Image (cartoon, rainbow, N blue to C red; front, side, top):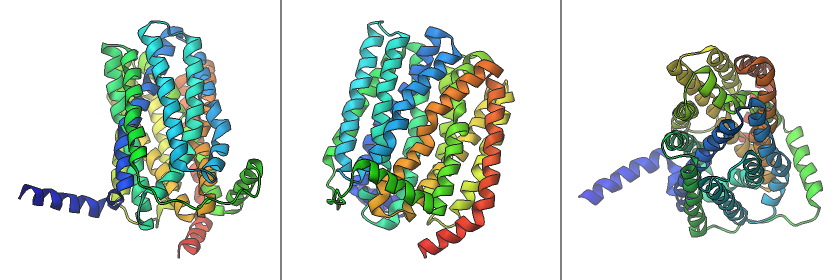
Length: 420
């Protein structure tokens, strides 16, 4: 009887979340849930330790810039590799590189040898790992679902996993920072990679056709760029994501300043501010995972940057913690709606032979912009203050939303023609 009840529950879950019917995606979902929570824990701990060592907004921004610079450089070429080589093998390589970086952070912190220079170097190495990992991760989703119609649900669940990890990791990380120190954040991150590696090894994947190597990597990269440039919906969506990547997430680099100086808090405040955005992301992912199809997603893509901009401007003026948290929930939900909706539309439109390269431009337009975003945020905050910096960033997001709204009729017509 109990088994019968569990079967009924599983039937209901699989009806609402059809991507989980695919064994490979279930393995990926479980393994990455553990691994990503550790990753986001480290992303909270490293900036806090650096700011604690230096008390410099400039060095905080510089670390973010140099840490993500390898991502900016390597991401497009990673997309080319993703269209040529086994995506699972590339992801396994990235996981082993990631565990080495996290273990080095753990050892240095526990031995009290961590310095600004060593943290900067390891941040750069982590950027190399991310540059290899991101495009492959996005392109790999389509290989893990048994039915193509489950792809949009898999993308929504993948976003939900990222968001819940952003919620759990920073919240626990803030508590660990305040109680036992950053070393335990890095230790958990090191151990969490094991789950991701085991899940990837356990998958039973259908061999994917690999395009013949008729040109060099640079030519294939240019071919992917031409494809994106001439495809109006993908081009417009990626340009708007670039605005989001440069200005919409600039606030993340300034969270230590808002937590410590503006809101007069400690490491737990930093963790809660980071987690607030993730809570909003979870709400957005629940909506997207229950939604069917891609119709109307382009209208969400147009609206979300305006909401993000207004939320950032209001957050910059808040001096009350709970109001700041609510505003970041709004910003987080809108960011995830834009990013996941963009991912779904692009993956539904793109040719399989160019998926890796197109998803590398997707990753580049969003996370790949973080080096410039962090440097911009740190420099502006040093010159005009963190609150004024977010007013500028929020205003630009609103302008981006207005621009995309003007493109919307043409984008919608093109999407209708491609999908029907």
